[in-house]
Length: 290
Image 1 (tube, one colour):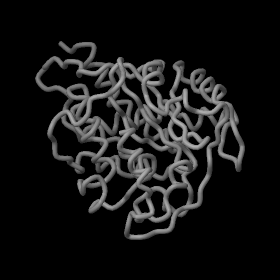
Image 2: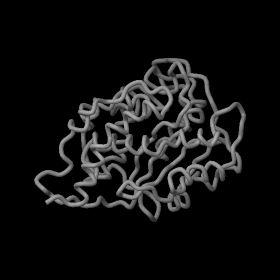
Image 3: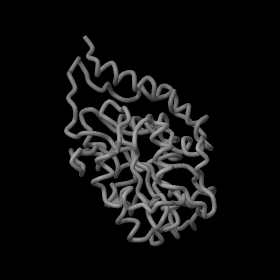
């Protein structure tokens, strides 16, 4: 007999392809959603009626990054870097889905695994558009030579959500599901908060808009007076929760944002087969934030 958690997990998988198709309507410039058969490409979350246990963490953070703030630090990058596309990214992109502890901090690199890109091939068109690397794009030099930014996020964070998240497909499809259902870019634009040259917005207003739209308080990370990250928090059943612990404990969190912030635009960086143009400070921040 199926447990309630099994039914809930199966429901999430069945809803995912529809929610990804909604990206075409809800997000600007979406090109392609994966086939509905994508949900059948991964192995069952738990076989033979095996009862799944909650992983040893307390909640999730879905970290979204504002490309304009990060890409202003990039002068040269290879063609797969999101900062170098012909048109600037004007929506929040995904940084990662991170298991967190209530007392502050997070687990990392929880089990040895070899990244299997074949498990996410059906998700690639969406990942490339809404989860690009904004720091580096060369698989030969980035993240210790282990491959794309996705490898870093899966190895560092995805492995720590096991057994609730079983594999690469589970991890990336779950993040995309939350990203599409809780569309921060759309919520802010509906409240007339959008990038404009030099325009500033009250941090309190940004937080209030997201809290009203999703029913939970977000956390902000700022840099030089601009929004760098917007973080949404979720219980283990993927329902929104306040980011109170995340806000209180995380360095450079909302408490360090000025009263008014910007969402800067940027010009696409010059293409080069190198990463020297990405500052050491930016790379350090990536590792610090996950």
